Amino acid sequence: MTEAATLEGKVVAVTGAGRGIGREIALLCARQGAAVVVNDLGASAEGEGNDAGPAEEVVSLIRSEGGKAVVNGASVADPAGAASIIEDAVKNFGAIHGVVNNAGILRDRIFHRMSEIDWSQVIDVHLNGCFNTSKAAAPYFKDQGFGRFVHFTSTSGLIGNFGQANYSAAKMGIWGLSNSLALDMERFGVTSNCIAPFAWSRLIATIPATSPAELERVERMKTMSADKIAPMVAALLTDAAGKVNGQTFGVRKNEIFVFSKPRPVKSMHRSEGWTPETIVTDLLPAMESAMTPLTRSAEIWPYDPI
Image (cartoon, rainbow, N blue to C red; front, side, top):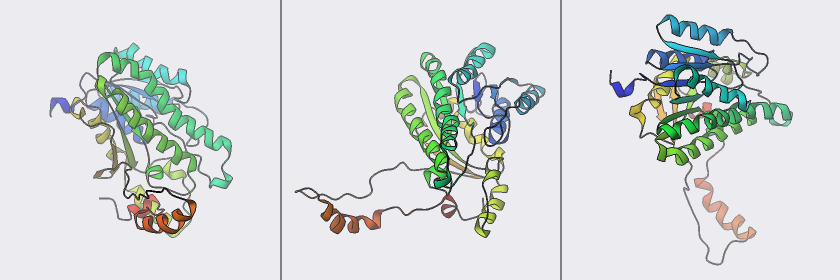
């Protein structure tokens, strides 16, 4: 194994690591040689309650395999709690080299039925949580001249989905935050990248499926296990991935792809300027062919996982 592609000597914090994708990431990072802070509040898929059991189980498994890990049960939505994740890494293992922002909840509602609480709690856990942990780690990354951020976005934001305005907005916010972190901290040897995962998890299981097409999509999702996501995360945390920065990757079973960033695809100029009338009569018809139609992520990936 290439030494630069392992995590020997690294200390990594993984949020939402008690179950699903986060659990698989924590286990693989430990098997790759990292000491791991296993953070998980142990809440339900909608963010209610807490239970230290899942995180403790992951830590026990890592230790039984000869690895190093500690439990952190803080909520990433609480700035002090998020800071404690990084503090636990430094206190127990002497450093922090990588942060995986995976923690999340779902409060799916069609928009006209979405409450302010549905909105704010999803934003708090996903977007504010991502900011809180990243903010706590950034000074350590800067001072040591090395750091790796891996954040979880979603095709629900990058492409679109029904009934997920809160989740989609949070995940696109994470995308923007990651891009800004990449730009701001590149000079300090820090990278920041996103992953849009395709995997069956307890969060995905909460999404209602009422039509034949949606039921087919659910069955397809069940074939995509969480362990398929972990190798890409582990790779981005390594020394070898130092030139990969500000990117977004999709992982769909055995298929990995990189997303483009929004860029202008067509422009029009009028020397005398535009009026509402000329925009309606000239510009919009001319640009129609370049406009991106509304789609759901399932329409972009209608084929069975590879």
